[in-house]
Image (cartoon, one colour):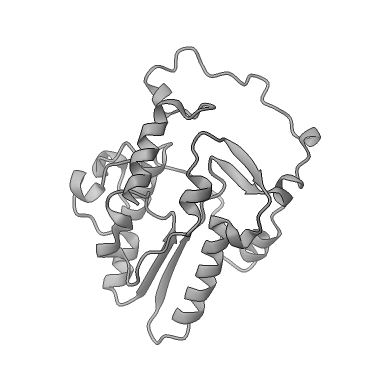
Length: 212
């Protein structure tokens, strides 16, 4: 992998190598990690449930910092986007930030990948990075301690990025999976699978994007 920037950041940071998830889907795992409670406690097993309404009014990680006198700022994908508006009421000192191009570029859920002739500054994660630098410069001169959460969206389907990144990985250097077919007995897991037209998942994402 060609990751010079994240490698540079990692060389001066605390790095957690054992990255695991509590459940193999976004919202339950994020809700669990950010509250310190298992999905069986938060009662979040899908993409639309809000733990404060299902499991209990648990204190979130950024909320704990905020209530302890920290400046807390969030941006991008920290909590799973949904009707609770990134937990803004409890967790953040500043208005929550989403990249202006997020829905325009990543909102087409019928694509699994796309190479765009666009600079980083016009991509959602590029805009998040620029905003994060601005916020860090502002809070670093404050007398208060601060907690800044930056949630980059990639890598995540759909794999939409500037062409220059695809050029780093020529198709001739990529081996396809030896068995690229879904299982015959996947049963109830099928609605949560990503197919070439987003299939049963499409209605969920349309619902979420209407709420953001």
